[in-house]
Image (cartoon, rainbow, N blue to C red; front, side, top):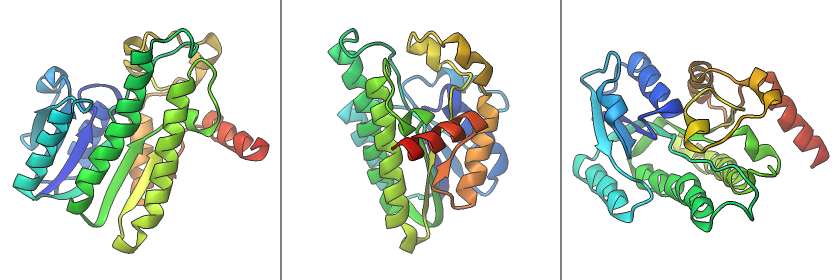
Length: 238
């Protein structure tokens, strides 16, 4: 059984990955859509019969074990893994609660790593891993310190894993967009600065480029000139 596994699938970038993968990869037998809340997917426009909803909270160890058990029971061939689940809280380190900051580490870093490790035995030659990172990974982010540091971890981990899996012909792509027009800002109670609003991009374009870059075997997918300039500047100044 050939499948795609997509976390954070009920909204934002994850939901767009479900839509585009469902439309473009007809050879897949199932698309496993993982999210704490699957209500959004139950009413997904044009929902395909291949979509399997898994209501799991990846910050709960019991739910992680459920995912591990489902993989063991079905023994699928994972052709595409998208780690799209994530959370962000904006504010000074001294202002945000300990719980908010640890939540970002738990979901953005620990859960992403654990899902990747659980899925690795079921990946085969030609499989693709897409890890949702951020342009925040390229330089420190005041008022977004823990989030940016976590995304730096995601990108570093992904690029190293890309090299490690080269012999297995499996690619890992770190997806690093700038601000994307999704529910992310509402959920994180984040007020987007006025100067960033002109750079807000649609998730459809970011996901389309990410899938194209993954198929091309690239270890980074950076959408948009502003983020590319940030990356270049960070490399020069770093």
